Length: 148
Image 1 (tube, rainbow, N blue to C red):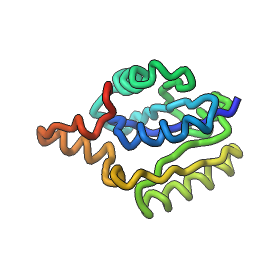
Image 2 (cartoon, helix red, strand yellow):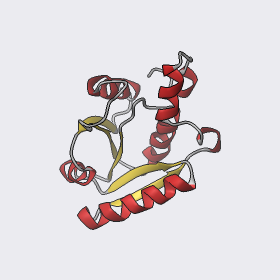
Image 3 (cartoon, rainbow, N blue to C red):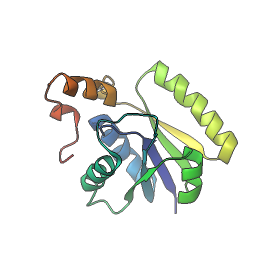
């Protein structure tokens, strides 16, 4: 079964993330959305809320599974029997970072990374921007998937 993982903190999961998942879906028999947990990081939403909201979003899509993980992405990939890591890229800065990560992940585990470029209208949307807007009391629903 061709399986990919789409990993991130997803705090929160944005329409940009949703775009990547929906565009990757035809390429895989199974996609595991891995919600990263880093004990050193402060999150707006706790792990259960992040995983629960994403699982609800894809409740009608049997090819998608949502799981939290707190170790290396390559270890998570190995447990899930994953062949590919799915990543989104919005800018040259993102590309350089993801290229380095892909090299390290391939060296550690042999897992390949597939990059999806952000749709032009979604390039400026990030979880950190959404958190910042929310912090200042702005309505962020236009940046979140319907049903999230």
